[in-house]
Image (cartoon, rainbow, N blue to C red):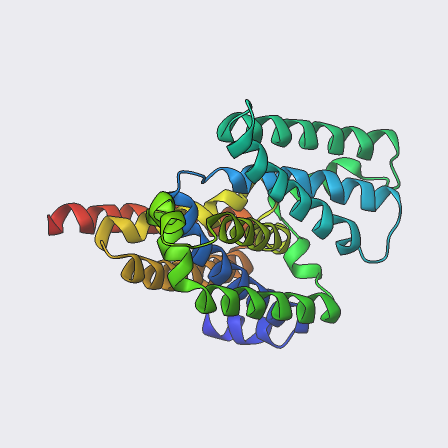
Length: 277
């Protein structure tokens, strides 16, 4: 088994996949704790479907760099979800459901009506479930992912105290002069970036798993925000690495395998938490 792993590691695309997978898992886990505690976990689903719709448009337009459309559209929708969820009659979960379903439907419709590929079903499946995307990354995409991931981690560490305050008591944060709206906006933009990056790893339909499972698993064992965040990051990176290794060795879809490992690890954490009580 080790010989097989070393053999695969000689290929650049495998090394690229592991690097990008680890970085995406790390970034997803950091903001996942905040989203779970604010009961906004499914924003990942909504934004991932928006990203799928934007990717469909980029594919039809034959853009060499589809990030030019996907990233701005996803960030704009993240901001709209935040504003819509707070300031209008269409509240959080309803707004997410509405945008999510509409973007997914229009994306699939566009890819079928203006098809530029002989295998539309295969392209859609790969985008939705991340079956092969992570193994076809170019060096430019890897560098872009590294830069954006470093930026996400830097932002989280730099504004950790403010994010912590807004997460636990937004009203008190406003009372002491913290710009809660600004930090909520920052979180929304960062989450949008993470979602776009994660599409290559697990696909549009499975992105929420990278956000939710590490945070929930950590909460089964730890109670403090810092402990939950640190364990969530370690948990997410470990599961991503293990999932990608299993996928490489067994020939299973990358995204589904990572999520399966997340689920199994969550069950272990839940058992440990129950025994510890």
